[in-house]
Length: 463
Image (cartoon, rainbow, N blue to C red):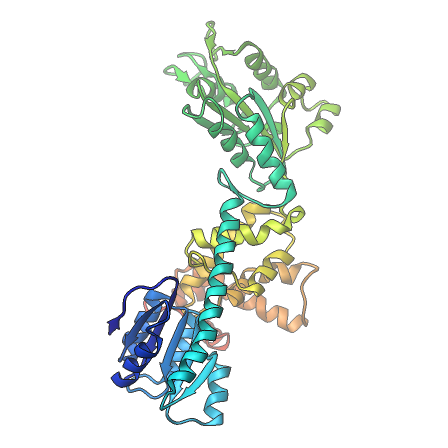
């Protein structure tokens, strides 16, 4: 395997068991600003393609150990954006048609004409550069629309980002509203990071998860002997985060009696531990968040009006994901790249984006993240899985039960069965016997279904 000096941008890999052909390719293209890699062994060539991710591959059709047609299939599966040009001394219309069907983009016959090679390659090099420019634009777009851990380019989210920048240096209390999973905690973290107390602690408590009898102790602390079991003094959340920011998530679930005490803490900027008599001064920023309609709760008497007015002087509303669908592709690209499902700079398959955009997202960004995690697990388990097909499995349950499901009832049931088998295999860490037990069927049934649906587990998966 040989390597010429690095050129800017475009990489070409030539795989041919004839050294003379490799020398001809290097000589013909040496004037081009390319990185040219060569391999005379097909298996070494495949490793080179997988490692270097070239934009263009020149591939001999007839080689020992591994044919060019087999190698073509592996390259297209592993790197679908790569342009593969087949080289052969045995041209036939049938083999050309088969090569194009399997993903080749062109076909050159031997002996290779240098002029013809340069002309064809010039076209592919230009196309590769256009793809790189488009990918760089995508990357710039993603970088430009990331803000303190949040991703969005929709007018609704850009307005939220702008308001955070303006408010963060000056706020004392703020209210963040929005449905579950929209990212309210990220807004609170951004307010903290951009505030004068950014070096202080950022502490979060979920008001719906705290036992009511322990609420006051959790927030304000207690002194020894304040109640049965209080064997020592305890610092509450407000004192712990003194000099920083406290986030009270799901504040609509805070008991009314504690709401009055919270209002007093906000007004006096001091806490009195449960069972204590001495005020402890605090200097904090307070961010309250909720997915409930606090105004309606005020009207029906389940939330204090004075506390609501104190909290809502500065309000952020985080839109549901279905109301900002122009952000879905950006979010999908961000999370798939983060989890290694997408190479840095690679573009998303159009069909994959379409599946995610068409979905209604009742669980918002949190649900999108969970679906990407499931996609990652399936991709690890199914050895030769296509991301678009795996995404169909991830969405299969919603398609079966939701109004937007399409296709015949039989096809939808088949898809649902496939999804259930994959879910069982995930839970069983790939063990077919355990998956069969979870499904309540014989192991032979699972093996038959795996073969029918073309599900191939990694070679190291347990039987």
